[in-house]
Length: 291
Image (tube, rainbow, N blue to C red; front, side, top):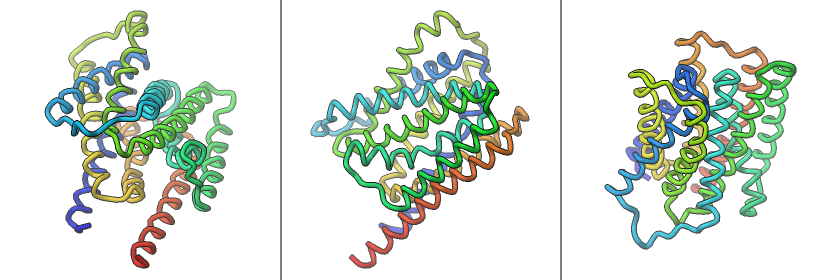
């Protein structure tokens, strides 16, 4: 693989992480019901992805297996609904760092669903993630943030399952799974939009449009471009910019500060994911040299 292609791929993944990292800030600033926020941005994202699909349709020969298509769409819809709700209840840092354990959950779920046995570094990372979760929940026991942290942790498990189902669609069109997930999220949010009608203003419309088109839509296209040019491990390492930047934007604009326990737990989770990815990257390099 050419060096220029790798640099382009890393740049695309880094841009994806940058756009995705702004989600916590806009969720905090938008004074809507969290399910309405998730549904509103998914509705716009679905329309955006439909337009992209019409402009650049997949080859007719590409067929999506029904089970991973629907299962992946449902768990990703759950990921988005849980993550947005968690952002409203707990700190943005807690929400994104707890969700970022997803690669480790993906390794474990991949063993269960597609019989891909986790390697030793992934087992070690899972132990570290559990330790990081204990640090998170120790500080939040008895506080309102405990519920939000729990939702964020479940969101990470759902996100991990989503990546496994996408892996099962390797011969299909994963973008169709994303489109379906946004449609499901939008439909689920309809009763909430009726019960909690969003207050429309210029700023709220611009915010939800930004989240639907750029933070989700453009980011998905950039990720699809980048992942074809660098390995999954390299993409995972580059994407660590997201959980680092996410709470920074919120801190700068709203002054929200995560607790010491959350920072410690988040550091352990990031260490687990990055260490596991580095070991995998080293193994890939060794395999390539031996081959």
